[in-house]
Image (cartoon, rainbow, N blue to C red; front, top):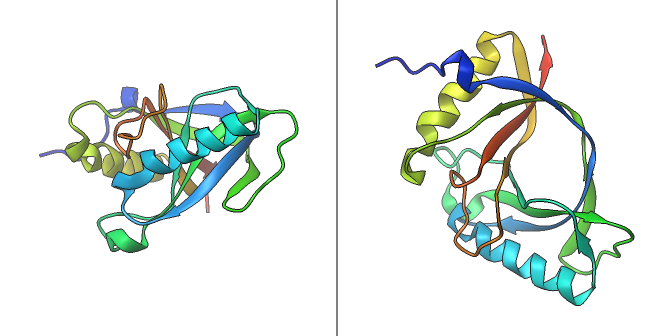
Length: 159
């Protein structure tokens, strides 16, 4: 079986820096959506304007890192002044060139997209850095990797 991602499933885009409010999570990626809902509740209480789709930042490979140690951030793009409070923080996601693909199929087969995606990036002479980004069409407590509308990975040529 060929484990390469067809070229039409891998494209490059430029993204702008994005201000996000986020909550850092440690534990199974299956719990990511619950963290997102906590963040949404806090933003609503603080009357902060959300201006885009939810973004997941996933730092670890779940096939190599124990579930209890997986690191992720549940993020929402925001506008205006946001004052960090406790576990709810803000940061600017860096802009730059990102490789983009989309996972289709069952969430359980996410690695069949993500592995070839990273291999395709390297095959084209790029290196990737930073956490994987996944965007979601809407917020829900059920969300986890593989359910997003877009997978993005910051890349640069060479190295």
